[in-house]
Amino acid sequence: MARESTVTAAPPTRLRRVGGRGPWPQWVPRAMLPVALAVWLVSLRRVQLERMGDLGLLQVLPVWFWVAVALLTLGFVAALRDLRVGKGWLAGYLLALVMMIHATPSLLYPALRYSWAWKHIAVLDAMLRHNGTVPNAQGLDIYNQWPGFFQINALLLRVTGMHSALGYAAWAPVFFNVLLLGPLLLLYRSVSSDRRVVWGGVWIFYSASWVGQDYFAPQAFAFLLYASLLAVLIRRLHEPGVHGWPPGRLLMLLLIEFAIASSHQLTPLMLISALLMLALPRRNRRTVLPLLAGAVGFTVLWDATVARPYLSANLHDLLHALTSPDANVLSGLAGLGAAAPGQVLVAWVDRGMSAALFALAAVAYWRRPWTRRTGVPLLALSPLPLLVANNYGGEMIFRAYLFSLPATAFLTAALLFAPSERPRLRAVVVTGLLGTLLVGLFFGYYSKESMNWFSTDEVAAVRTTIDRAPPGSRIVSVTGDLPGADLHYDEHSRVVFSQDTLAERRALLVDPTSAILHAQVGANGPTYLVLTRAQAAECYLTGTLPADTVARLRAAADALPALTPVYRGPDAVVYQYVATTGTP
Image (cartoon, rainbow, N blue to C red):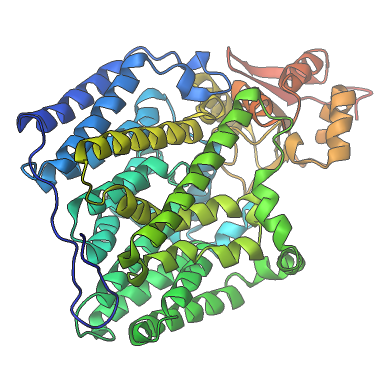
């Protein structure tokens, strides 16, 4: 029977080492890792990205890719059970899992993935050009008020002499997930010495992290800091006979809190909520309260000074959200009616996997009493107050899942990897569950890739537009799914039809010609209409506009004498508005 771990000041007891030799030669789990990696790399040679549909990469990845994932999973379970296989091999399996999940798009795509990553590249470029705050930032002014992530990258570019983050931004998901390995291991080792629970918990975390907030973004950076701080804190709470902090370590943690408060608007609130939960047991307070005071102080100070313009402009919406907890919880679960059939399936798969993980964590709390005194269940519950308080643009339920995942993954591992009288049957069941989690992850993480990837033709079309457009120009598109259209956003204005009111979108569908001509009214320079394959994919996948909207606008634009094509390729076309007699 496993011994219990505790969060009191007394010397913590640890879970005993369990396991032994597996029913296979020692070389088997060691051989499966390089074999799985080789099969994975070979499988990526002839992937036809243009054939992606409403299930994204799932439709075009070859059978050998899935064989590689299966081999990796089987090898990991075998290595985890066999004490002859060292921790270095377990780390290798986890790093290989990160590579298979997150490096696959980077290796396959000819350009940076995801339009929001391109947007953040544009923000960083603008801050470099202006040496700080970007004037006339329009809808991107929020980044002026939480600039920490961008300023750190600006410093990196200046030190290295690089001109743009495009050279490394494509590898941000790999980078952030690899760095998360350290905090997760520290957190899990602080409450358990059972290597199956520790390493299995990290595998479950990576296998269930489908939300996709690990790209080149402030959220990924802030979440890494959040996980690191909590890992150090939980470790401190489990050190026997220790209270409070050495001055040097406390200063380091306060600097982490300041970096979080200056980089992202949501993560400081998640951190405060987690620290409040950990401060509930009286025995923890001498250690937790200094960090809680720092997190509250930095957040209030930042929001009252640098971020005050944003908070003042959105105060009404924030107060309204506090009075609508039911709408906040459900906001991320609505709007599937117009989505592509595959996306409806994906949404239900992701919801089912998320609910299953929380259910397994709840069962672990009941069946593994030792977990109740670790502080981990408190971390699992800590995002819930914010889930009720605000909808965060319809994403709060997904962010709450993300911030609870380090805790729910550990609790699930504590349930699945407990000692069993029938270890072989348990290994089969666990392998099946780990494989099921990975299937759910790939559905959530890869299913929108037909709109997230950009061809070289699309990148060239937008680059042509930006190079041609003088200050004061306007860039018009159906959706915001463009690679780099926000470059020089301080000099150009944008019109995105999918972001218009419902009445305006209906008018667009009734009379595309009038909508195109109206979009250039009031521009202080040339107007460019950019239509691309990715925008059409977004319309189809999300249902924000009918799937044929891009094609209809292209037909209308071709018939307008006032629009002249300045770029035309297989995946993109760019029109420039040229005023003629009798045109508005």
